[in-house]
Length: 191
Image (tube, rainbow, N blue to C red; front, side):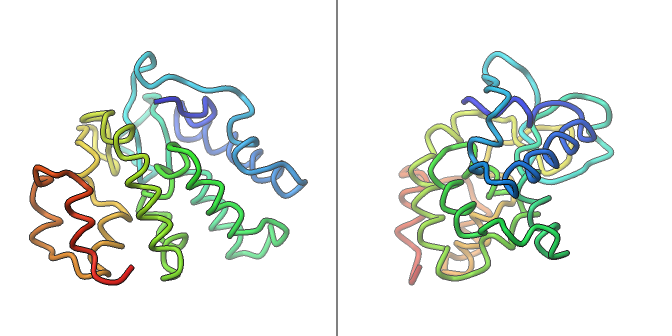
């Protein structure tokens, strides 16, 4: 998978670059363009964990992909009302268009992006559409530990939405069934 290069590195460096993205978007740049302005890193060529929650002291000074960070920082800034010009709906919709954007919304720190029920169906559709690429990364996902897991095994906003739409906790805790995520989505009651 290709992920914006600015998301790769030590947490402090990535945070600094992401703050520049927020300023660029507030000045009129589009969300996806601002994040990918420094080019893309190929996760198959550049090692590192795909971090979905942080910062984590366990990850220390090692470079990793801080996949959740731009959305988390934007959410924090929106709460402080310091970036009122940025449209949340635009950012959400733009993020769902691409695999790395959907991945960023999966991180638990970004649950505020998923809370409105009207966003559940588009979110589930985007996750399903990008699932082969995202799940194909293997055991590289983490919510802050040094050991990678496959994406289904990490607690994400996907499981939050599924639980809120009637999927049993036993299903969410079990390995993926033979039909994969598509089979799990057949259990969704009302999204």
